[in-house]
Length: 214
Image (cartoon, rainbow, N blue to C red; front, side, top):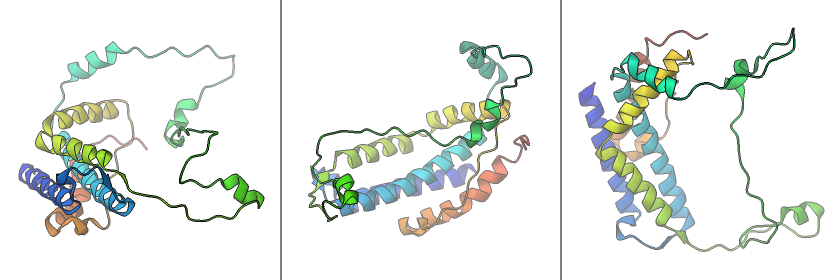
């Protein structure tokens, strides 16, 4: 298993360097086209998914001392719920896993270049049309590559943090993490694609001792 993880991390580093070089980001350009940004983001997302799964595989092999979990749990005491009337039961926690993710929208009343005023479109006062757009900043892509390279250079701290988190999830009786197959990862190369294909079954086997929370 250790050899597989090392091989997978090495393949991810190679793929990351390939994406960086193919996009010309090693030259540290100021701007890139939107098409290039979308392509790089898609490939970085695929690499990040594989790296997260490899780190999860590393974390599943680490043993966390029970006293470390107890100390962490004592540091943040749980808030006491307010008293409820007789005959009323609080079942909020039962639906915690069914709640949709929270989204925060930033609304602005001023016109923004490159956007269409859809309120006017729906009112029939104007027609929808493609807005001209120029190149976009390359700095966010470069920063994302640098952050991912930093994790790949030293994945042990991330694995230890994730091991503690997995142990807390087990202790709390939360559902076992699910690792579905990924499609299209062979575009990153045959070696990394093979690693991605093997990861779902390996992670399922590594987390087989997870308590049944059904």
